[in-house]
Image (cartoon, rainbow, N blue to C red; front, side, top):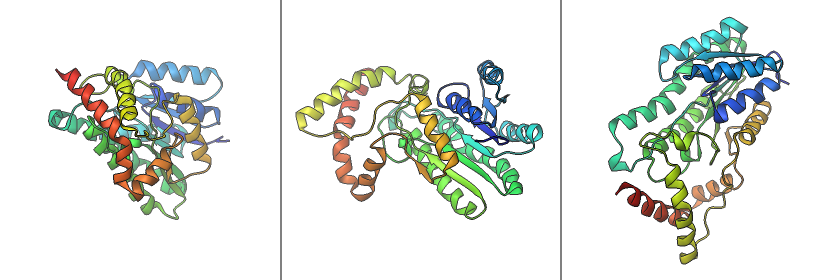
Length: 288
């Protein structure tokens, strides 16, 4: 149980962040819910508190250093400690490389990368005083693989993975853990709220095309588990809090495919050919 522990979850207004906040609170920890949408986190905090757990909503935009520092300060001032920081806030984009604007690049790195420093730096100050803590950064399979039509997001999530690995080296034998989580598809608002337009029509239209191309060419697609509900992914992260690991792959088949990528990227890319060609066909059709 996490009785007496204190956790911050960013991006807690919906999806994975909300599900994770609820599950961590049920384990006994006090949870600080951070997001830009004040009404959403206040509603969720009310539900958690009425269930007998402890939740504190803090409206914050973690792309702003002052907001991130205020968020951590709120946790320490209210509860006197900070044990778990989950950097879950993030957003994607939908555009080819040549159509990705400077504003998209900047936005992707502000929310998916810069925010990691803004929250982690003040959190480490408190955790080092305690001699314990756990920082969990939610990246994506896009932090390990390349995907077409969201290059800035892919680059940012690769940066998130690298940040976490560097952080682990600095924290070795300090009592503070760092984990990067790399989910595949999760049933959240992510695809509907990507910059450059919703990816939902793109995914819906490309699925049958990908399967057709795979069949025509006799290529087996990567055997990675499909879209999971946020609660299932959150449950795996909670297990990781009890048993910290360097990298957490939440979808069956994802770790195995990444081993193939590490051993033979060219061979792994062959399995992605139907995905690339199918999505290219649909992207060009949608952009006409």
